[in-house]
View 1 (tube, rainbow, N blue to C red):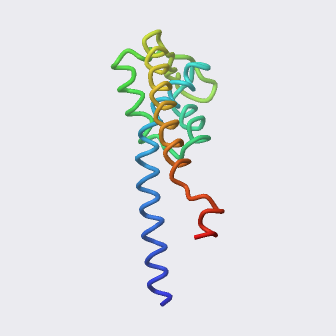
View 2: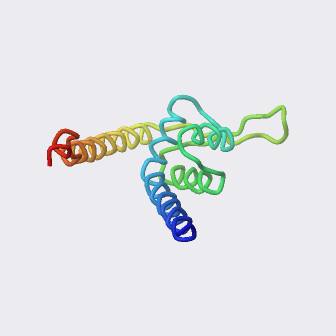
View 3: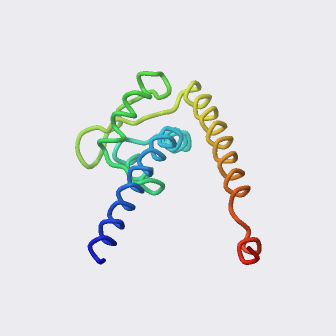
Length: 131
């Protein structure tokens, strides 16, 4: 039935979008910290940079920047802009670099465990054809 298959497709897409949102939350801090570690950036510039990796918008990034600044992982400063008012730039602190390194280690360990699990549990093509 066409309507059932359309419903199933929509359900799969909706579920995948929700899962991606959860994955995104898990790695967003790491991506933001690494981006600013490479060079100081202002908010919208950071949205564009992070969007190269995951789909984000200002409503996601700005609260995260505020929290990371409040937790002393970033410092901010104003720099004049030729395109309007001064821009607030974010600079990663020593604590921010340590936190970023910790997040990277946790992400690497988790992704390695997940990858090993998947490799161990993916049926071999030969096994399924002989069964």
